[in-house]
Every structure is written in structure tokens, then in C-alpha cells.
Amino acid sequence: MAGYQPPFTITNRMVGLVSEIAEKIGRLDRNKSLDMKPHLRRNNRIRSIHSSLAIEANSLPIDAVRGVIDGRTVLGPEKEIQEVKNAYKAYDALGRFDPFSIDELKRLHGIMTYLTVNESGQFRHGEEGVFAGDQCIFMAPPAIRVPALMEDLFSWMKQASKEVHPLILSSVFHYEFVFIHPFADGNGRMARLWQTSLLCLWNPVFQYLPIESRIHAFQSEYYEAIARCHNEGNSNGFIIFMLEKISETLDLYLQQAGAVDGQISAYVRRLLDAMEYDVPYTAKEIMALLHLKSKETLRKHYIHPALEMGLIVKCDPDKPTSRNQAYVKK
Image (cartoon, rainbow, N blue to C red; front, side):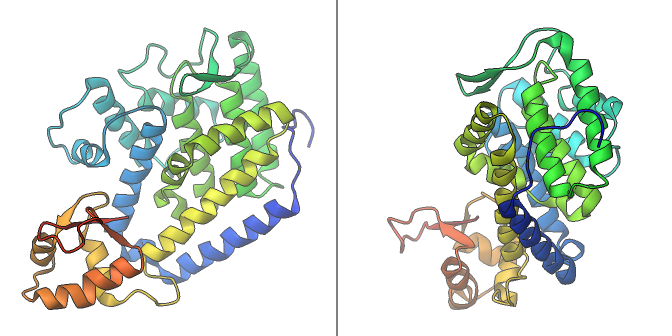
């Protein structure tokens, strides 16, 4: 490949992770989970949006994010509510734009940052640093270099897409994009959205895999991987970090969808389909959702198996027998 070449080396660990992920994707395809679980797809999309925004310090809890997306009145900072609306519109466009187009990148940035930043939909004109909280990991290249750097990155990506596996290519892009930091704001959100868009070309299942929620859970490690790669002069560590998080996300998704060796009963699947993520439900509320009349049936066939598999958790584990005990889907 002529022209710009991002510094990375494909290692045995990367190859092993790519093979592992491909095997799990195959299990999902055979299970037809996406076709059969529209409720799960919607919940995972909400988790992606909430997590990607939370990484960038949006303080709205997931139930508020769900409320904004559902069109309900939500109390919270106006900018953060607008960020949710923008992210939902941007993620809803997955699969319907060309991830190899810089013009499309700018257009989607305009959607992602609508009414929230001054330089929406255009490359930055000022100098920026990459921050983890209040700590500056490194200073991004000067603004004057951004257009050429982005041209080089997209040219490489187009050529490399014929030779480099999408899992590796998208992770390299994610790191290089964060390093260049082409926009005044919204770079992290766009990097994560764009990696997902590249992966969707390989398999549409990635439209509904909440990889962002796994990154959010390991946010410190995410920024540590970026900083370490900057110091080492290559993106190997970040590629491995992302592949590991993708693989772990697939494990969780397979479990949710009931595709793990047939371990999840029809009762538990019904329970999981009825519950929203991160919303507490009392036993009485679950019985109403499932149209059950027997508390013993609820405990024996639904609650206890789901608890044992770690698919739901008690909101008040210190009071396991409390009459007011509630449960949350993980």
C-alpha cells in the first residue's frame, strides 16, 4: 500500500481475537437473534448512546436517556438532552452513509453536535488536547494540519480495506482519529460511531452491539491504552484493547439473546424481553408485565434462575428478603 501507513503490526494476539470474534458472530447469525429480538436491539442502541455520551461527561442516567428518545419530558441540562437527541439521530443513520467519505464524516458530526458546539460539521480551527477527565494525555496536531492528516487517514483506510480485516482496520482508524482530534468537540463520540459504521460493513449485527457500554465500564483503561500507544508510537495496544472489548460485548449479547449453549430457559428469556435495562422492577411489577398470578411461579421459574445466571441483580442485596426488593436487568 502506497502513501500514508499508520504505525501498527498485526500480532498473534490480534489474529486470535479476530478469530474468536468471528466465531461468536457466526453463533449470533445462526441464532437469528437480531431478527427475533427487536426489543433487545432497541435497548442495546440506548445503551450505546448513553455510554458514549457518559464517557464525554454527559450526566444523564440511562432512564433519562431512554425518556428523551421516547419523547417524554426529562429534567436535566438542556445541552445534555440535546446531545441525546443528536446521538440518537446519528446512530439511527448507521448503515445508510459511506464511512469512507470525509464529507459524510463532517455531515454526521453536524448531526452529532447540532446546537451544542460552535464548529459543528467542520474541522477545528483552534488547538486541542486529548483529555481523560482533567488530565491532558497529549496535544493534538496543529489545526492547520488536520485536513491533510484526515485525507491521508481516509486514503489509507480505503486502500487497506481490501487487505486488513475490518476489526483491525476500524480499531486503527479509531486510534488515529482520536490522535488527530479533527473537531473542536465530539471527537470521542465520532470515533466510536465511525468504528461501528466500519464494522457494520462487515456484519450488520454491529449496529446493535453496545460496544460503547463496555468501553464506558473500562474508561480508565481506554484512555490508558490511548496514552500508552501515543508514547510507544504505534496503535498495537489500543487495537488489542478494542478487540477484547468487542469480544466481551459479544459474550454479553449472546447471553442476553439466549444463545449460550441453550442455558437460558423460555421463562428467563420472557423475563429479559419484558424488562428494560437499568430500570428497577419490584416482584409485583414483574408479575404484571408477565401477566402472572403466582408468586411462587415467578420466584421459581423467572427470578431465581435469572439471578443465578447473573442476568438480573437485586437493587438492595443487603436486604435479600425485603418486601420492597427490586431487580434490574444487567
